[in-house]
Image 1 (cartoon, rainbow, N blue to C red):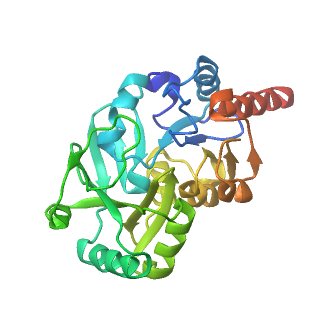
Image 2 (image 1 turned 60 degrees about the vertical axis):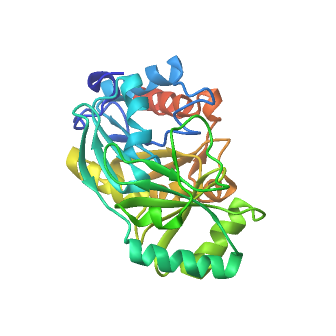
Image 3 (image 1 turned 180 degrees about the vertical axis):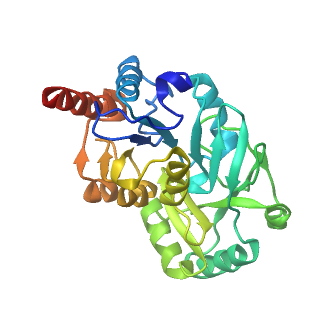
Length: 285
């Protein structure tokens, strides 16, 4: 996918597609289980772009864990990373904006959560294009993403952070996220981005924050946006966009607020919706 065929540049003024911006999450949404984007989905996105839309990736992954995926896709435009905290220009390999976690507040939040749940397994994402992922004892990292181990919790606080990751030896992800919100919701934003991925973010930050910033750069409004996702961290994005579409494999919390549930990420769910919208627009011309 190039900037031309993904529409990652400024949205055009065409009227052949009902939305000017198609915002997609990566994992569990645009990417299939094997980490690829199907040819059908590529073609559906290209057709939407040719009709005047733009495509914007909006992912919970921080830039260091995202840019290789975007490079492999040939994605050249803007991407929202780090749960909305980073706006990244993929073509220029440049970080345009970045919001960091107040480390003092994060320390207070962790103490309050552990007072309720007992000891947590911790990891953290350092800020920047090449920020390391620090992983502490007991924390299980999914997939083959690179990480730097630490044993002293003090190491978490030695450089600016985008987020802190939490895991618990016995609580489920839903239980841990709820406990964290109740204990520390006044200090940090708590979100769940996937299996084993409960995160502490800067207070008030969400995917909607970064999406609105990127959309403004593209000259697009919320009323012109359709968003696709699969996890509770996509709920704010759905709240911002005119239409939110959950994948069949999505978390029940996201399905509950979605305007529509499409096929799964392994069954071209994005393409199913985009093709239907394009066909409907064609019949009105």
